[in-house]
Length: 143
Image 1: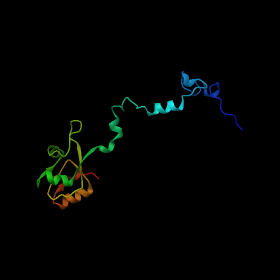
Image 2: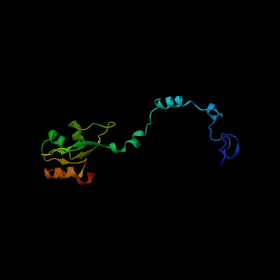
Image 3: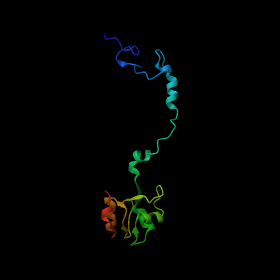
Image 4: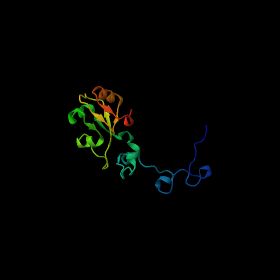
């Protein structure tokens, strides 16, 4: 049977022998009591997440979503639907002082003829819009 590795007595590990630097935790025979470790784990971790967290953690919230059912209540036939007109109708809010990126989804029924530009439109929503006689600017359509 092989003898267990003896830590902290020179050899290949060198200097602090994998025990960090100084303090009680670096000393032989010292370990924090388990109940104390559990309390430390449960304490809230403060200091925030950093100023760039939103850029990396929440990438899929880039679009403000508007459903077709909401549009027929707020727009008359023949109206143009743009991010600005949606903002004025109260269907979207500014993000960081700017107009948001908007995506139109197919939930609900659309019974008015509308033209869409400057917004992303799902494939199913595009089919509903064209069925109602409306149009979507093709370059800005998103899948």
